[in-house]
Amino acid sequence: MAEHRVRVPALAPQMILGPREARHLHVLRLRPGDPVRVFDGQGAEASATVEELDDTRAVLALGERVAGAAETPQPVTLAVALLKGDKLADVVRAATELGAARVQLLVTRHADAREIGGQKLTRLRRVAEEASKQSRRAVTPEVLDPVGLADLTWEGQLFVAQPGSRERLTEHLTWNAPVTVLTGPEGGLSDAEVAALTARGAVAVTLGPRILRAETAPVALLGAIVATGV
Picture 1 (cartoon, rainbow, N blue to C red):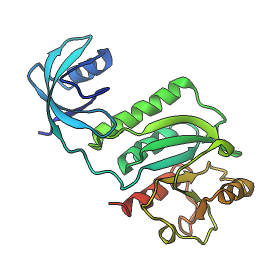
Picture 2 (tube, helix red, strand yellow; picture 1 turned 90 degrees about the horizontal axis):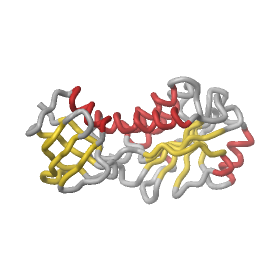
Picture 3 (spheres, rainbow, N blue to C red; picture 1 turned 60 degrees about the vertical axis):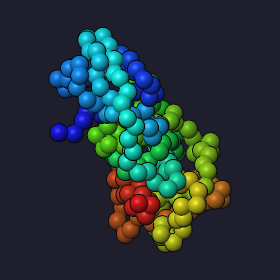
Picture 4 (tube, one colour; picture 1 turned 135 degrees about the vertical axis):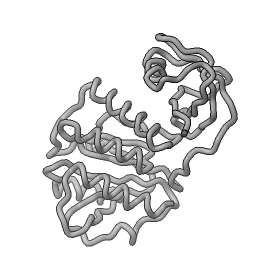
């Protein structure tokens, strides 16, 4: 049976976890002496042993370091417009599984929402953490506070999903620098928004002949990106 994975703030000879993680270990029916796998969300991973466990805390003893799952050759950021309901949670979960290093939330002209509450942002970060456990990644993507398109900065390449574009991702993508992929809301990005991004060096690319839903497009574009970097 595979070892259960536990997110810790940092790898240390002795790691003390609070009530939330202690309750999770109780749910898994773990006991002192049981093995677990710990990771810090930054790429470090190791075996560990449960030393103490009660309702308020867990104490883990560090074991041998282990190699985490391979990451993309350069970090990949997903920039995604704010979406309604649980759609963002689904996108963050899939982005984590696909290998995104961070998720940058965006406020766009036609965005489904203009802001996001602190509780929802905290939940999205927990979704990323749980997805990194499930997918056996040693990295947990950052979920960043929303910014407007004019305030978006990036390093390396930026690819914008834009229906009607004739540019293909594979004709432009290299792994010489970090990569950012950007998708809009249900109403799409305006022509002015796309023009402003391309004027700053972004490349608008096609996702094929069909119009994809706002929660499908980021997964499709991110999947196409990471598949070339394995």
